[in-house]
Length: 183
Image (cartoon, one colour):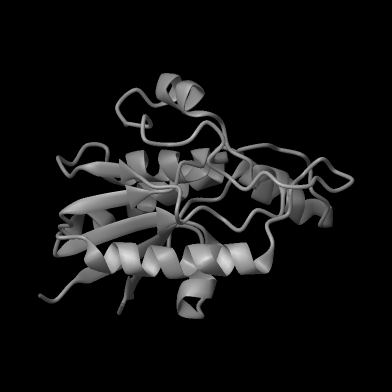
């Protein structure tokens, strides 16, 4: 069966805004969408809905969840939360929140299958951030590729993150950019 997979990078986050000022991690944990990010989602909504996907797979980081809801929340397509394709943990914005907190913030989504700490949580650097080792990250990229291609759905949208998608495809996506991925 031919499978269509569309990768969609989240809209601009508050972390992106602050980091772009001086290149320093602003310690903006699990950053939400910025005002521009919300507008980017509104502009991409029609294009996303036209994809006619059977499933939306979204990272449990807030900026991705907000993007998926903005793009597909009014569409009857099922939305599945997956921690396999979270961002490569290198900054504070890549540290998530536990499933109980996420369930309260996004009651329309199911987080019960997530571990309490579903992001990489190793030794902390001077910022108090665990930086995910490359080999751990690359294993996740491979695992995601296998998982998504084994899914029964014919057409899937994946809402996620720039660095993860870059490792997966070799392309750096802009905010709310939609890319058809040949897997």
